[in-house]
Length: 262
Image (cartoon, rainbow, N blue to C red; front, side):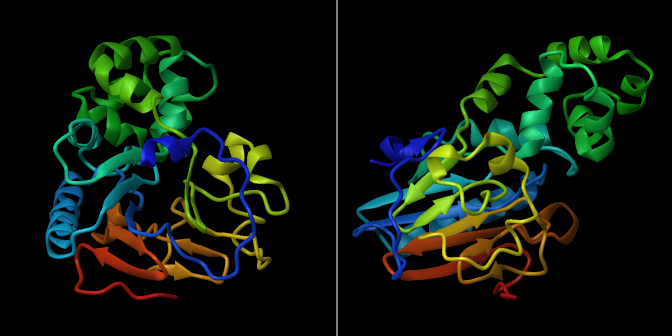
């Protein structure tokens, strides 16, 4: 059921005023992990306990992207998430801007490698046993070669399998947001993975609630038309999951017994 709804670009989204998920289904959406395997393991444990305490007919687990960079164990996060086959929920993955840049660096696209290293890629490289200081002294072509040799092909293939959107009833899950006023089927991957303005300040009814990460907030940022759940895990120790079931929403998080909403 969930796999049928998971696409590069979702289509045919109708306006809705009373927001809810599909009957008999639940979804957990996890915000930006950024290499914090310790927090990921803790939150997955909470989700497993929640599922055991609250059985449901169909359960999905959506990761909103930015699994890698900045935190200490990107390699461990990818290894963990690529082996969730026995987890009691169907896992789906959206591509964040950090995964996008890594894939482009590995493909040898010029003008990206040093920028990637500067905004958290250095920690990712270190997690695969590649000293970041050494990379800084290499050409971009050589950086791509060294990283390709260090990162298991299965990890790269896993990242390449990620989508851009996931629709769940009246909720649209993306990494960064959407371009306001543009139909979802016409949204560009650049916006879905990177946008901030004008999405964050837009107050129009999209016809659905956009659930996103990408932009760090102090606690969950809940607005009438969007819910931001990037609580800065790599620096705050708070990794957040949104739970949608019917017309109810709630939150799970590491590092605290509750998650405040702005």
